[in-house]
Length: 350
Image (cartoon, rainbow, N blue to C red; front, side, top):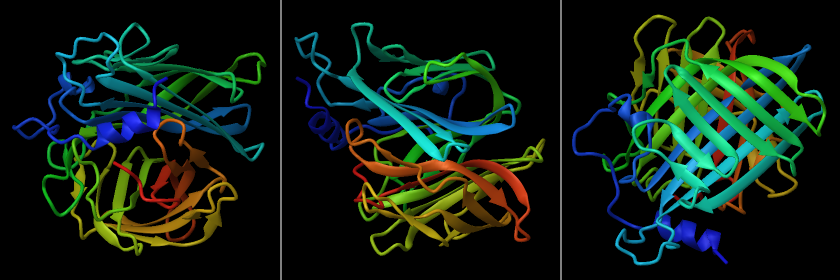
């Protein structure tokens, strides 16, 4: 039987994969998979509305190169692994539901196409055709299904320098990274076998790939991707040392219809506020933050404290990822999106 965690961690320790020699993201080619990158993910988060109720959702596909040589004689040698995470936050019920899966690529079970977004993991998928993304996840054990369509309403946002985003003092810690903010969402949500509920909302997609996504000195990161109510998009992140201090930071702000302002490493400051302690992992997460950026000072406020995900059966980590509001200094809501925090239960292995 496939030892998933052993394969994953051995894959993440293989040297020699990185980015192309020429900087810059090339679209539409880079919508697809990058077999030369060691680690890659497509990550969609957002808020769904129906009948006065709000749900948060996350659908993520990971592709990891294992280091098995392409000339290996066995058809069953796992040259790539594909992982999937799906989560639903039910604010009215005060609960989060989560499912995960993993499979080796090939045999019609799991795949990630080059040149276009087309990721498969058994009956889960994420596809892009033209300016539209579609995803479907069936999570019977977790009690929910999502069947969603995402229409782009803005140009693709290239993070960092033309889509190359530095993640530490060493330029070798650089990833290909773009975002699709302000996605218009429509589709259906099914809960516990009930009739499908039509939903609408707003979403955010990140696609990132590279060889070393985190410096050795870092234990994890804090990240926000926020769709502002006025049509703007705000990204901010920091990589943390073991003592909680910032090793590196970055992000961007793009007003509706305007150019993006890319933040330098000294221009973003995350200041933790109220915390929540997980009864499962015992990790203590800041669920409220003050984030200072060149675009202003913002408060990030979780809409449900208990949004920790246990992914030890797939990617091997505990992490917190949840629907949150973005507020101004006066407390007024400015937008909504997702906050992600890793490396609080233990050092993130990447």
